[in-house]
Amino acid sequence: MVEDNREPVRWGILATGGIAASFTANLLDMPDAEVVAVASRTDASAKAFAERFGIPRAYGEWGALAEDKDVDVVYVATPHASHRAAAGLCLDAGRAVLCEKAFALNAREARELVTLARQRGLFLMEAMWMYCHPLVRRMKALVDDGAIGEVRTVQADFGLAGPFPPAHRLRDPAQGGGSLLDLGVYPVSFAQLLLGEPSGVTARATLSDEGVDLQTGMLLSWESGAHALLHCSINGGTPVTASVTGSKGRIDVPNGFFFPERFVLHRDGRDPEEFTAVPEHGPRDSLKHEAAEVMHRLRAGDTESPLVPLDGTLAVMRTLDAVRERIGVRYPGE
Image (cartoon, rainbow, N blue to C red; front, side):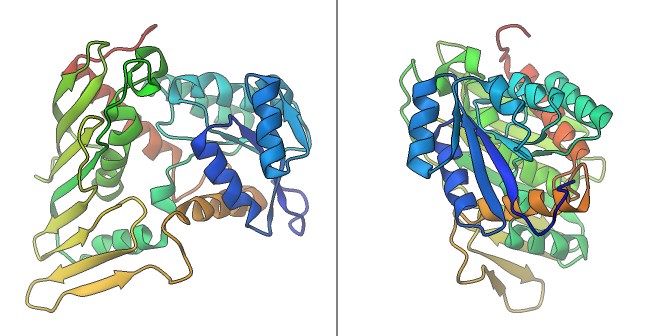
């Protein structure tokens, strides 16, 4: 719990890449957030990031940030192959953690982090910003309320055109490379937000020479008879759209389904209804919604968020593991 609800929540940033920069810029635009420290693997990287964003303390190694008692919560923004080590270090030191997705390299590592947080009574959340987006929450409420009847099919895709050279982290097995953990986590999380953990997983993929997936197609199934047709790719740009079809209608989410500006509800026998984001919210404001959820929970003394529950995160990691088993992708040390 943040002891004084009148004071800003004090954030530490662990890593200095693109998503760390985007998240930090959003935090600095929030009056109830303060970024007090940043850590990287090198002093130079940490100091450059600190100077860029006016952060008072820069650490050239992760442990110093984890031990900084002026930090209320650490945002872990390393590549996912390092999430277990980075988030675990912070939890061991008594820091609350917001950890980027994919939450870990595999379900085993994810369980270890969740177990550690629960044993220590510390807040832990996956940075699945999509779940915190007001339009996504509105869409889920409509589905849960039966606006389109019983869900029959979910379709979603996320692909980047590339090409990414062999030396890029997305092609590196040691860094958890491939399209699935970086991009496929969004379609899978979208489907499981609406339907829960699937009972069946089928997948096919095109693998790189390094042994990571360049593109993966997934068919998830549920005991209800529902299916999800999902796709991710790092060798071809896709529309990044989603749709949810039910027994009484359909919801279409256009480009950028995980930070949507609008979606359209089609109910049988009625005119389409369009739902749009609040005008002042930009397309990347999901990072602010995510940060606001973390700070709300810290002030309330909660150890996890009902919007991004840890059991749901674990369920997604089990599905990603099942997909990788089907397509033959293993990472070093597994």
